[in-house]
Length: 253
Image 1 (cartoon, rainbow, N blue to C red):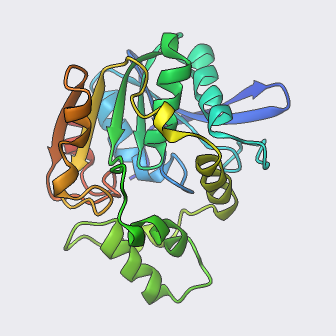
Image 2: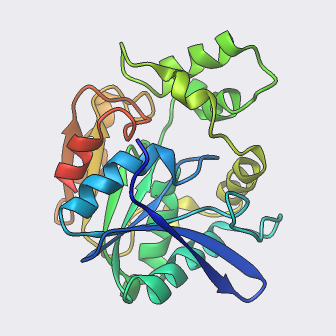
């Protein structure tokens, strides 16, 4: 489903960020998953939020759409600065930041480094601290168009989608250069320093069938930050989450 989104280009010196916009009201900024864009995966979800009275901003990561500035110096801190500048320039100065999958980490960095810009954080399909080894390589297999389609589909079905859901939609929509940048940016930073997301309130949305955060770890974050974390389980969804259950996610947000 194509939403009623508009697109605006935010010029930041020698970098341009394309920001998809929809709705009016309190601001929610969406950060997409590893190597994926902020468009089609989130169209239905964004429309639902916009219809409920929110302004949804979806900055395209560097190297995707009309966003420029993709190089080997794009650290996690630089990516977080991009989001903070979007909030400052297009979001009225403060917003709820929603990070999907890999985006959860950038959301945590934004909340830690730019606390004045963040009203709260939504961690949508965030991973456990100890990701099962096979899951760690899944995004890179799924994004590798040189692999046979049936192999990629098997990875997508096993790692990203709930049983019975069609994973074909995620055969497309991957950006290998952006994915490589994001992967490098995670390895060069001390993730523990940002795990708590500063002092912001945290809403954790856990898909029922998320292979990156299996059932035994569902209480992990709430046990660590009991006064700041609200946890909600999204039924009949996997790690992809947004193409699977946009209505449930919009309702929880």
